[in-house]
Length: 449
Image (cartoon, rainbow, N blue to C red; front, top):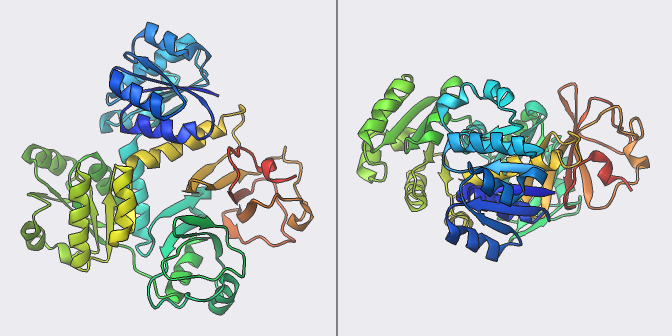
């Protein structure tokens, strides 16, 4: 497919990196010739220098024959205008980055009126992911499927864990939990574990089940922590605003510390239920004075990766039960886990995965993917709806010739999570969760020979 990405900032560069791996024909457009040249040299893409609202530049980029135009500059209005022009010129699908909370309130209406196929807000999406993690504090990361009926969590096996040295099958029988081990990361490699896989200290487990079963399992392995009820947020930017709104709606006490006085005044007006503190969130004396150690969780959301890492390490040293760190640069993100900070999120990666799912879903003109989560560069968890057109309805799984690089990782039927067996069959209306190492999968029938 042909993709035109307008804007070569953090989000745009990450999209080029992720989407180029799926062998799309990509054109990157930006006014900064140096940045465009860097991306062209690093990836197999074409570059065009110029503005996203310039019709001639868009024509040069070939939007008239583009399957997708993704506008992700730093300006909401420019992104919307770019998408409008692209649609007029013949682009099949348009996606706009929209960050301003004022636009957010009207976006669903504007999306239809402006003929946008999708809009995305990296800060809002990241805030929702953080809120989900705070609902499962023992987890490194949390992904929900089928409207929350299925949950996949990441857990790290720590010293003295009862799981060390046991096979997956042994341990599941021992604790009698209805969970599925979806994938295990070890030393940078990912495994789709069979029953005889022996677990070790340091392994990162991806476990799938219903919320109730995941909670019960966490208790049995002595990793259960109650939902965070008081959260200390460092930095008062857009992510902090959206996160506070989400947490307050969940009856969580929120305290935000922000150094800019004008921003503090804005947050005080926008978030009357939260406690807004004007101060330096990187000053340990300020953090101690404001009661950091008494909170259930600390979320570092300043604009500097280094500050977020340092504050998170300090919060961890104060025995804060849950610490979440925002890190934008991939190189820093890869190092942070070695410092003992597990829950690290990058807005650019969060949104790249969301767009990747949408592009994959629309690849053949059919909506055949409900959710997509990249467990690893080479492993994906994908949720597929079972429609009446699916030709294998009612056939037991043991009778289907499923390819070896796929596993059926759960079925949601009438909002109930089902662990599949050989006698289980797909029914119309099911949501099926599949884990695969196959590339560019966009339909449930792809897994059957």
